[in-house]
Length: 242
Ligand SMILES: NC(=O)c1ccc[n+]([C@@H]2O[C@H](COP(=O)([O-])OP(=O)(O)OC[C@H]3O[C@@H](n4cnc5c(N)ncnc54)[C@H](OP(=O)(O)O)[C@@H]3O)[C@@H](O)[C@H]2O)c1
Image (tube, rainbow, N blue to C red; front, side, top):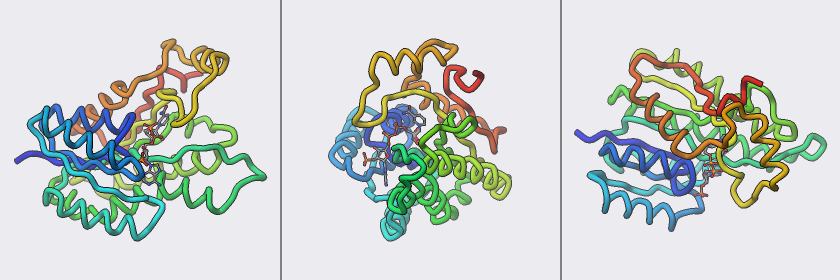
């Protein structure tokens, strides 16, 4: 039987590459999106036309509890089974201290911590049946702190902690790991100046930004690695060494 993977935030950028990587291997793909529904539908079409796999789209704003509940029901009925979840969706923006708002808290915690945890919670029976795998996308900056991003970094730190807790709690049936990217893509809707880009590059021992493929390849490696659980792999060109 074909395996099925749910990738959140899969319409664009890194999530899209993860979805394509598994589609190439013949997995059925559940593409989650929030606002990028047209891009998600186009990706589903591309997958079904080019690979031996089926793709379905589910839409939900992970900040909203009722959306998450509806999404869980929809995911259950997509293919009737689930072998892997990649919690990739994320909102990312600065929240300097002195300017924090409860709206920022709800948005950044919703997509980066609460949503992923409640998705796992609602889909756990399917994952137990398949002896599935969970991959949580965190951030290399959790280990070092990213100034002006206290809520985002705390949310990703919480997701890293949940990764370790669940790896123990769900073993031996389900493996739970994290991928922690470094500088891969410019934040959506913004671009780095040459000066900022050069500063970032000078802090990366491997001397280049990462690519979507670098991340998708690591997700695939962790899904396939049957003796790895509770780990977080920094995919950051060595940036976390400095
Ligand atoms: N890019 C990097 O350099 C980098 C660095 C460190 C960590 N990471 C992590 O790697 C993962 C992928 O990065 P990325 O840059 O490709 O992500 P991204 O483009 O910033 O976000 C991926 C998707 O998340 C979805 N999303 C945001 N808020 C949401 C919400 N409230 N509910 C549901 N979906 C929501 C959006 O879906 P829609 O477009 O459908 O609205 C978006 O397309 C993220 O977890 C990110 O934190 C990335």
